[in-house]
Image (cartoon, rainbow, N blue to C red; front, side, top):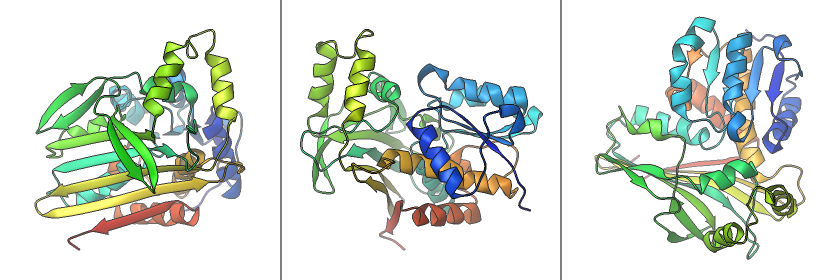
Length: 327
């Protein structure tokens, strides 16, 4: 049953702006008053991300959360979410988001998968250009965090920017590092022996970031000016993820990719992140999703919802390509 409802967006940044664009395109009305909405889409950055779930619980509203909050926070509130009779889907964007959805689908189809490696990030063909497309505060913080990876069945801790590897994606010289992902909850209960998440940046980004830090450009007094300068520079850009899964003779790979011209209204990260919650909002409007706390990998187990989401994302220009050597 399709019913009319309104969406309240928590956030005013780049992702929030893109959400408004896609909601208008889907003819889903927005409102500024949470109490008058049927659904909250959370797009708060930095330390404010947890406020989205707090608001959802307070007003008993469904929540699709794109904010950068790790799974343990939601799990701690799982009972309260169920008691409130609402649907909460965390990490409802790109990565976490589409990446989790695809992994959940593949593990459901191929329980023998033992190893997963993900490479995700943003690039540009423009030499010596470093695209800052996401929440600037979260992006910088992500490069300061230690990461946990699953290696040979054991959870191991790595220092920030560890495992530097020179790469080439789409003919673009790149580099990648082991990175915190926000999807470490996939480590347990799924029979995996190896799980590696690498963030991809343009070649030379590591040195550029260290230069910014060493010269004080990211100090508290200079941070806002640095952010303004780096975000205003616009060139053609690509946001993507490569997912490789293997085990028991099975090898599957997925490519997720979005592209934007430098003069477009939305950059590639805005597109690839905001399309997902708007599609899922339409599913909620049609009462196609159960109540309670649902992670994207769990949503991926539903073959019909998975197929419909992938189909609609492709219609919005998101590249989603699967390759299997064994099918």
